[in-house]
Length: 149
Image (cartoon, rainbow, N blue to C red; front, top):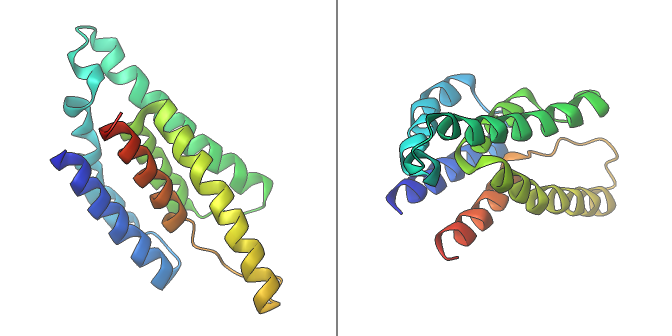
């Protein structure tokens, strides 16, 4: 519970910074990395008795989280920033493949709807939408589901 409370605190900090500055600093992500690696000892896979499974699901989550946003960035010609991609990969490592897919399932439609709202009411056709707050909302939902299932 304490680990996930700290994770929510870190995500909120990243989200606020992204809203204010429209970027995710690499130094902050490097400092976040040891906390992410700590998830290996906290999540269920660490007690499975199979060392391969301890790394396999988090690595698959990182591939899914980073890979999906990297694909979106390539399709949209840079519509997703590099910091968002790196943070999603790190969160995929924490939540695993199913958790990060569920977090993206929550966050992408929210970002899309907010983008439509922004476009309609401001009239601005080209605008920069910080994605980390939406990713954080998706991770909040997954954390609540994970803790209270």
